[in-house]
Length: 272
Image (cartoon, rainbow, N blue to C red; front, side, top):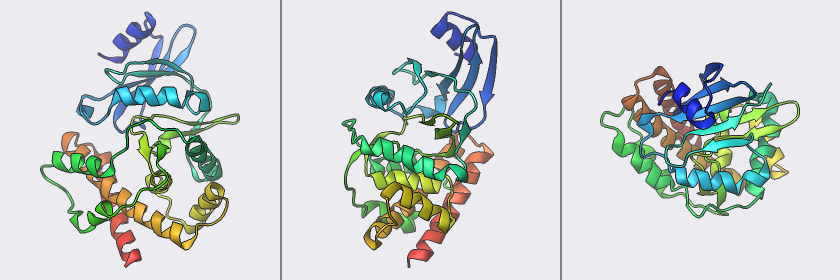
């Protein structure tokens, strides 16, 4: 179904206007203007088949509802992943000036100490991406042991996909959106998800984030774990980007694969 049909199905109303949001990497997102409301509708792409558990996301959205992290949810279909939330005016996606607020937002989720009952299985996810790739752009096998050797601690509900567009900031409230990758995980995975997905390579910016999140700069042991998770992220999402590029040859996926492979090699050299 297209956005007009879906809007009619949800609201029994033909939209006055639809505007495509360009930032989606795995979904088609639209700002939809109705007679008496303005909403955002997320429509998963058909290439997503088998990648997400929308029944789990439905459960997680209910779990985090009391944290008021997301804009008000108006509709969710756990069979299709179609989701509709109220549109929030005058919000900005993440940029460096919001780094302390981002740390507090992520910490709010972690400090709630919630559990979905289903882990975000890093190794299984990595293998799923890898198996879908027939013609890899890069060989990341030299770093696969970082996934095998990963030690998880303090497991709780994590977001697992802290890309720029999933953190929204306004004058009155900040938002954490899109929990389709969410599951129980080590909070350090989320910390490095934020750092790597937003390509924060500036040392000072990282220190600002760490100090706001931890209350102090990381100890040597904490820093060692963060470095390990950083490498894991570059391996995992390089494979994801290659998988996506093979099924949908869009330049953005090739750009992500290129960047992740570059950062992976930089991290490996730094940790030798």
